[in-house]
Length: 207
Image (cartoon, rainbow, N blue to C red; front, top):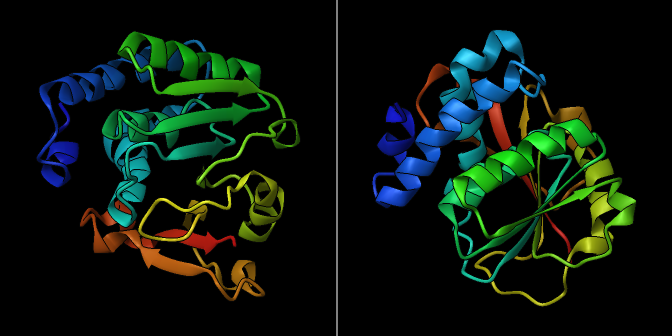
């Protein structure tokens, strides 16, 4: 049921496998009531949404104790798949749309995730500090960096400097103009399925 996730993450524990398999049933179940994933795309849940979210885990192996803010999480992506993979990392998921956040919170509870917290509201209402902000196709990188800067902690604990890590697709030339410190990585370096041919990770360190 989670063949693609186990193909790229062969060292999952039995508990993590169970959590990902449960996620594969909970999202379609919720999607019947609240549209958190495009109805035409729900059949591609594992590859296009869960595995896509886990691209961040190929870019950085968060050390235990890392704090991550998932900005505009919607129904919990990329935060929840990452929370399963990194049980000793804390994820704070924020979104302005309450009903989508309700889906994410219910899924987290049913998966038994104790490393996830939720906040309904705007990013401006979040005043905590984090090592990284992650996001999945929410807004242009320059805007995301501008809004996230206040939430990035000064102290470093990972192999790369604290900053913003976003999952994006398509031509990013215009979007990244002026963000000279940003690094762009093709997700096709990690995952070989055709869906990932145009998908990228954009990382902007914030000092």
